[in-house]
Length: 285
Ligand code: AMP
Image 1 (tube, helix red, strand yellow):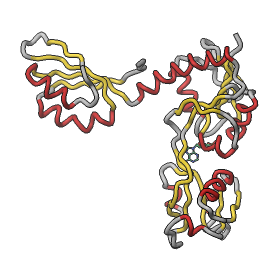
Image 2: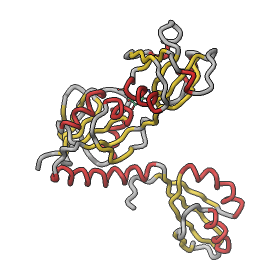
Image 3: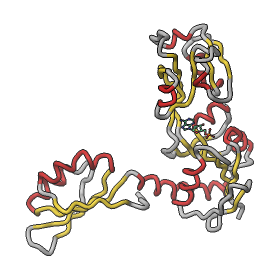
Image 4: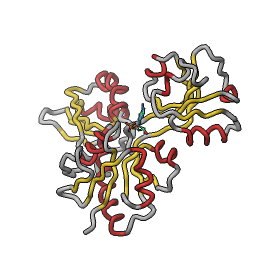
């Protein structure tokens, strides 16, 4: 069987989490940092380590069947690839930012201004949509210092926490686009490899579903079960098992980790005891 060829970053922000995801899917890949490609030992995929900016082109041309890549890179490179799964990591936004002292009410204030960016295509699309004519100044890095050295009036750059902007006296003004890591597929992928992709996506879904969920177990006085289950979001029928001690039951359910902290106090007030929160490794819905 021909393996599914998957492009990942050779180096960069997405690499570690891309490889970790494949590992969590039970796929064993030999460390390929010095290699260009590596064959998985126990699943029909071949990993191609490529430069981030080249990945959309390789996928479009069918040199790689799929890739793990930031959505923003696909838009910037303007390639015909299909996004089949958002992966929930490397979340960031491409944003416009201006020096604190510049007045900025809305995007119209950028008319006629110079904007420095490493993402000229995405920025131009945004300016066109808003009927703004500005002078895009393309630079390949350290965009955030451009206003300070008089190279530009504003910048357009990727932001995740905003601390780089803050350190450089810049204020985030408008979001051009939001991005996260995705699986993109080639228009040229054949049926045999698409079948492998479906198997891979099945595993990825099981891993991602489990990531933010926890298995919750607690002891509850049997007469309080209704009150406790009413607090559990979205769970129509948690598992209820009798304890050896009369009048007590064990209640089990799956819950979003973020929701758990919202209801923990109420669970205790209602009478739940011995609450355990257990990680879930994989979840198949
Ligand atoms: P790299 O090859 O390390 O420059 O990775 C670039 C990709 O990482 C970008 O195209 C984004 O999809 C993603 N990314 C996520 N957060 C950030 C961030 N704060 N700054 C730059 N890139 C980011």
